[in-house]
Length: 122
Image (tube, rainbow, N blue to C red; front, side):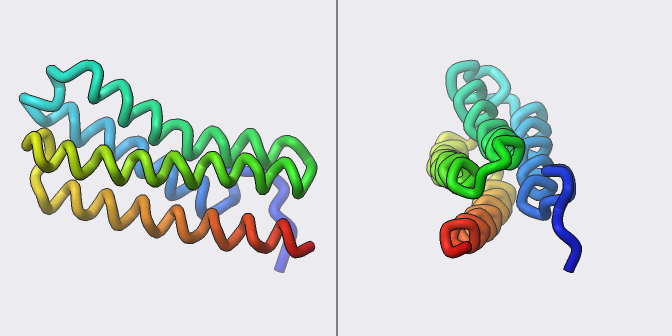
């Protein structure tokens, strides 16, 4: 297997980028969700934090630093999932969409954890 040269090649970063776009578009189409600026800003920032922490950690050129940034990205996945429950409760997103986004966030979180574990063991 070839060594990853750029963070843009990481599956977890690609999936995190897609999640950000889905969070943005989901709230854009929601009448209620698009008007709650505080909520919208918080969930968008948390989603962005996932992909940015993956990228920033990768660019540190240190397995230890990368693993630390992956921990922050994983924590942001949890924040996004938590906020998606609120989005569903407040009917900012349809239950089906909120559930799909939570599943995607959990999948990303598992991938982040696997990579962090690998970095810490090498």
